[in-house]
Image (cartoon, rainbow, N blue to C red; front, side, top):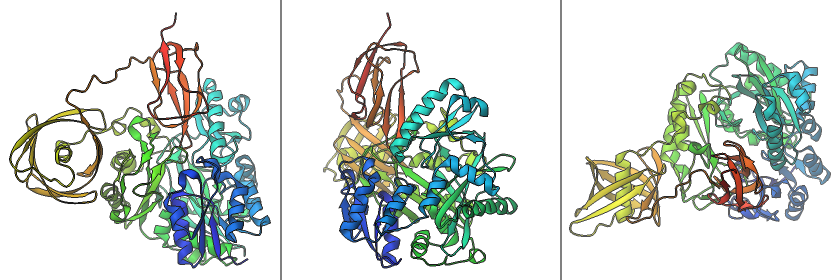
Length: 637
């Protein structure tokens, strides 16, 4: 069935990505949006946009009735689901067909089989594809039969949501409850299954594509082993550990998996690769993947274009023999999170972001002025580099992360750059749990800014980004606090052309040469450089010397900082308070007092001491702001 207008049933960077290709192919596009996304870039990019409320939460994008009504009102005749939300919902695909809409994806039956992970595993066994031992329903009895450790896994969805590794029976109930809540929030289905957990496995997936004429190809593998909390951080193609013989075996298994369900469209077959090079089917994602750009880089193909051509009844543009691979591609997910506080999600306004300066491909769903809410995934952009070798791609990606900073809230950019330098990543020795094992390691401890960066920050605090110096000579004292909470008492001597900043026995001469918006050209001790800065009352976001940080001006006569002995419990992130223990409950140090859901991730808040809850200041089910006082603890009788 031919179509001319496509409704994108998604948001953020993937909606923008689909709109770009659709536009180049001559299709009109329709965006949908929740209240929280009214000012988002994807809404303005589309030819038309429809509010699907009723509120800001992610549930807006799970409303099949509202999305179909938006298609009817705009006369769209095709729907692209993107990834996440309803992209792997067979009922949604069937409802689109029933409404006379082309669903840009596989058949409802293929989604139904592969979307139910337990049913998919049974289908793979029939097709001769090796699978991880498991149980179709999660229970203590099933876990004990499999043997610990086990993986608790949501039957629906993907992207690491609703997944927990459990190593002992006592932890199973809490893990199942948490995984079920997370899966229900993200996919509308909290059903769980169990699998044997493969220690030190690597996550390898194959991009496959089929058409309605029986043609089926693979587009190579992606290595998605660098993960934290079972969510991907870095993806690359080809895998640095997969040789030609292993690649051929895994590709054959991926194609067999797709043939088993007569697959049409873009899909990804995911495997866990053990240390002995045995591999096992994990799941098949019946949609486009977040990491599809690395495949596009090494093949030179546009996978969204392929999706639209296949949905329009065309044959695949290339046969397997005509597909070639060039170089190495790596994608890094830029997320609004603080890696140095257990990857806590961050909310707030993007004060400055100009990814066009990066010099590589950047797929973004935010821009300067976009507000990051607690309702959606923390990923705000993807940086994708392609080079002749893995080392070249890494070098380009690291440079891009430094040259195109996001200012206004904390991100994982510094962590990503440090990750590339670790021996584990450089030598391809990571496994899917490596980052989670780094708790307490140096890479997860925030680095202090170097003195030259501090000196530049001080000059901006005193005279602003434009550097309008007063005539004559004057001296100032200023104390700056960095993003780690470290204080720097600085003395500043103003001269006619600039300032000299002193800290102990260190000194730096600073001149602001030119400023345009958030871009600064400066001279420091005779060396000229560039920086990006956003200054607000009392706060400066600064990217300089390849490092992004935040400074606050500390008043000279400020009162003592808040000191807690563990008796107060504060919200580490903004989000929905899922649960909180009642007044009178006794707790041990380390026991979970409250749970907050933010950006589809649950953050569990432990007690810092033994005691009894004496007061609570928020109710379960309500929204709380970061740092809000949730509860107080008193010593037990």
